[in-house]
Amino acid sequence: MTDKIQELQQIIDNAKHIVFFTGAGVSTDSGIPDFRSQDGLYNMEYKYPPEEIISHHFYEENPEEFYRFYRNKMLFLDAEPNAVHKYIADLEKAGKCLGVVTQNIDGLHQKAGSKRVYELHGSVLRNYCTRCNKFFTAEYIKESKGIPCCDKCGAIIKPDVVLYEEGLSSAVINGAVAAIQSADVMIVLGTSLVVYPAAGLIRYFAGKKLVLINRSVTPYDSSADLLIQDSFDQVFPKLHI
Image 1 (cartoon, one colour):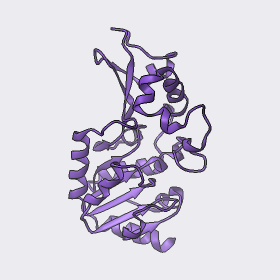
Image 2 (image 1 turned 180 degrees about the vertical axis):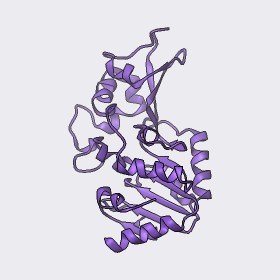
Image 3 (image 1 turned 180 degrees about the horizontal axis):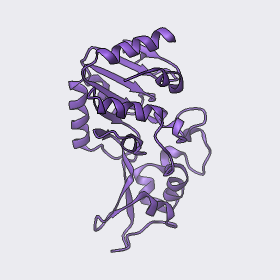
């Protein structure tokens, strides 16, 4: 492992433009559960499967049950950035990081200081009235009861989160693709790379080094120039900017 960390450090040192691609595994050290690990949301038991609850049709047909799950299992407003979030933000400040393409909806990259973040699946921190488009904070949703409604027009409020069956933002996709295509190093962290179309964005990378760091196997492992299968607390504390 020491040799692999040294190799990663050398790749970072030699890189001119790094882009990060992050998944739920990056935020687990901040106390936010991922979806597919043994202790993740997909392995907990509910009246409905989590995949169904966070789908567009379920939100439309069962908004009260959707919000009960959403408040309990998707809003972690006290979470703080961990060493990975902070390291990426520091690399951006040092001028080496083009940006972060993330599947996460927790806003921790921005909280750590990253400025160029492409949120493929939206953010729990943004919520809008479905009729008048008034903005509401995540705290408003967390503290509301039942179905949260707009205090201006009375319509239901929807999180700016991409649910199953919904399309990704074309503007976010275009920005992410541009960053990936401009990078000479791409570092993929904490994602199983099985959720599409997000995972397919890796195919746009044509730079020098592809690095994958994840505890479990991914479909892209064989494509990586450097593969590290370990927890982040065994890697990032040993790296420097």
